[in-house]
Image (cartoon, rainbow, N blue to C red):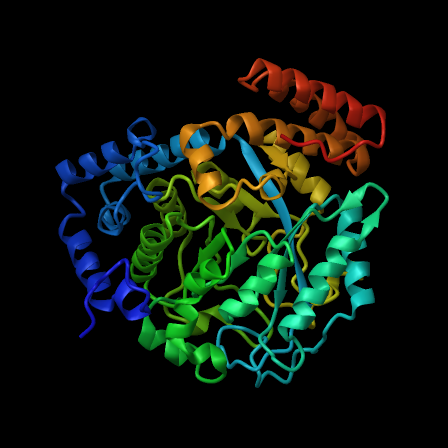
Length: 482
């Protein structure tokens, strides 16, 4: 039997089944242990997190105890601490992005995804480069600057050369004042050589959802296709980092397996990346199983209720304070509002999960990967965020200034990121307001810009940011960054 070793490069050792079971048992045994829970909460408080600490402030066992806890006042303390940590390290900034689906051709048999090879109901489509350009222009016309590209796994229709060509096309499109400044990539696990090619293409974060860390369930949920190989899939982030990609994004699809098992596996994966590569995950996503073509969530017995979902988000934020957290338009506006307080730092806006969906006047449903719950326009989402006191940020500066991997984490840990991210958020919000916003959104937004400029701690940075904001308003000068 494999033994647990967080520094191993073998999936069965760094995501060790027996260690997860032992951790769940430990958490259940200590879920009412007030003294232990208090000590864990104390350890996780922002003032007790130092630069020397690992990216994960808590071990996977400590984090599991918090998630298992059912004492109402302690659960509330966890939620409150998550909010404090979110404010300390990310402030009130919320990074905006949109997914761009390139192709839904797929040879895998994933039973929870409508792209599965046996689904004959879904309309199959792959964008040409001209169609990619049209999609990008439509996204630029909304105001987006950051995309996450998505494609099914199909060596014939979606080889790495196609993905690379699409990335080149996306970066080449400049329309009016629009430009996509960062392309994150969510494609199937691949080779070190291909990850090097993605790095050379100038991608931001490489994102790959584990779907489930429970190997037996994983094999049943992925009965056919290359994704059936659990070890190859689980070890992908190590190959990506070996290929030179600094920032990787983890995630599971909550609802496929017992949530406690998935949570512990996720925390162990974060610990593993920190132990082996010196930097934990750049982002963690928290998608839940949702209805889609040929998919009914009621067919899965591990559906996640809202209260547990909120608790998971809070516990992830407490356990990995420096990691960005992402929630998509799978969730309703109401759920996203709650999640933003508890730790989410990135959200998608005006998403369409169909191939070629952004150029269609009406939202197409025949090729969607999942139902979109939050169907508001980007302008509406931006205004909604500002009304709640959040700064919608379209910033991509860190990638282009080389602040990735451990360099980003060190800035985040020391609090110096406030002198970079906060002014960049204010300046990119100003760009959106000038170029794309409705009059109502502009009124709210420019008032927020004035307030937020005053919060920049460094006086010199504050003055430069103010001058840049005025230049954006007065001219077509764009893309100022710290």
